[in-house]
Image (spheres, rainbow over the protein chains, first blue to last red):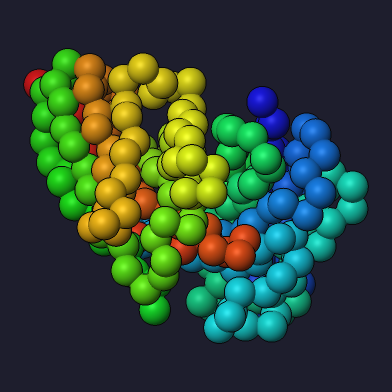
Length: 108
Length: 118
């Protein structure tokens, strides 16, 4: 099974900060990774699909990239609405389609 | 607009059974993979199963944690996905989400809460 490791588990940052969240896969995924944002009591929302494609309606301050088996979600200038938990999920050809354990972005 | 609406959650005793449904609209249901994902209270997201699309003969896949206890089925005529859960354990307590994948994008329902407790 492919393991997905997100870091850090918690990130404390201020409005306006540039923040970088990382998701590392135990095997090659190609571009097959998505990023989701989840707020308390709500369903997850897709931010990025296929590693670097911005979902329609998502602000352009969000971006995704890939280097080998390491994937990055960057928020260029953190806004109050961005304080949430972020998950990555691999969409490789075979199950299980594992999630990372999540990164909680908190107000510093 | 893609819409997924889960239903069927509730309180069930350990060892019991429950059937969840997901009503889908806004896309060609038979063409797309459908997942169930759950989230235990205060925990992260856990993928638990998939019904693949008609081109992949509706193959089903399951996480080890639910294999043999949970069964996914779909009714393309009703554009509905189901999750039959049996031999439920307290650790199955979670919000259960229905997810579809369209051109690499994930679309989520609002979730339905299942509580397993005596």
